[in-house]
Length: 142
Image (cartoon, rainbow, N blue to C red; front, top):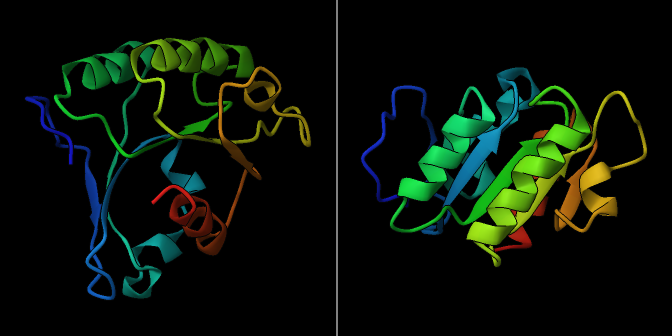
């Protein structure tokens, strides 16, 4: 769980009773990329999804965390272009080398992931991945 003094007004809790597993996921993506199926209790996770509106705020959140999130999910298009997401993830890698990063592939460059090609993410997902695909990716890091 994130241990920091930042505003959590945009946090979206997803709670389940199926597992006692709790993971903290920082998501940098437009909310429409997150399927409503993630809110279903049978997914097996207790997640706190946070949405930061720009790279500087996201970096600020991560810098102030006493404990980093368990997983970071980044949409390659979230900051404008995949190269901008690569710059952000490079900074994250310097701060938290072991933090798993999952990337939604760019809609502009279908089938090619800038983050994966640069070694800045651990796994990629299609741009509009369904809830099962996302939770499957998350499960591989827990």
